[in-house]
Length: 86
Image (cartoon, rainbow, N blue to C red):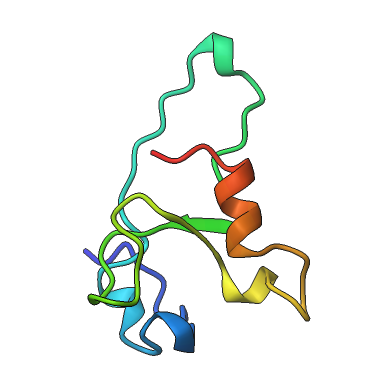
């Protein structure tokens, strides 16, 4: 079973090989007290494993390249500030 998108590509995060271990699988709990909270989809994804020197560690939020400038308005910093990590 392959849960990763085969089209994921970001040259700054390992290029074509980044999708082998990303996005990390996550299970989000939705308690009533957190109704309406944002967990990242569809703009952000969660790091599973990136090669040394490329990633910031398991659970780090990153923006999908298709939603980043110039096509979109979402950045890695935006994802980390607005999405609830696993």
